[in-house]
Length: 241
Image (cartoon, rainbow, N blue to C red; front, side):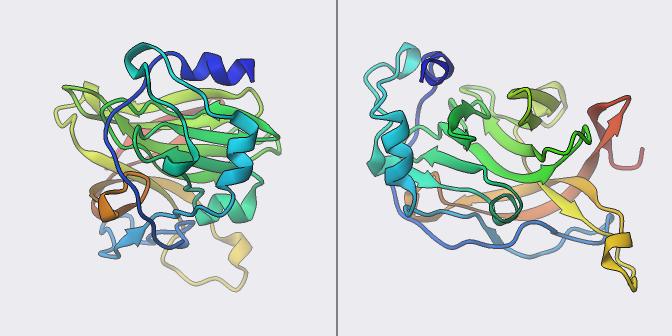
């Protein structure tokens, strides 16, 4: 609980309202590195396990820029992507009034991204980047009051630390929205286990469903790069490198 308060009382806020949609399989998005799919993806959004999550954290009142705002059950949604839900025991929750995004891992609660002034959590895929046997999270998120920026990061589920891999605020297109996906090559194989998996970063158009900032849809507008491991660390590789 102390860890939760330390994570939350740094100040995060803004934006609002509520509603919900369906769960889609985002574990593999597109097999062609050069051309993004035109599929419209709706993120997972559910109220089902929210009461259990709120029992764990209680009604926490935030400080800093978020003074007076509470993390309450009314605005809380389970936004765990299908691939994360089926491959791990991790649950991800998001608050529709502030976009604060928290992960429940082994009974403990962790902040997995910034949210102030942005969408907060957009999507994630499981990835054991350090090959320690524990699936980590490759996360796309956004934040920024005044300067909207998107972040690609890896949340290490062993160290419980977040590693920023790509930050659009350092590019010539800081306001672009992003999502991540695991993909396999577009060739057939007798044994699907033989297919290599790579992790792509897509630019996207994001829509808010029903004025609920926990309920997003997105469609790819391009492939901007991939995330790979070099010398044991996750790094972003621009398209064409």
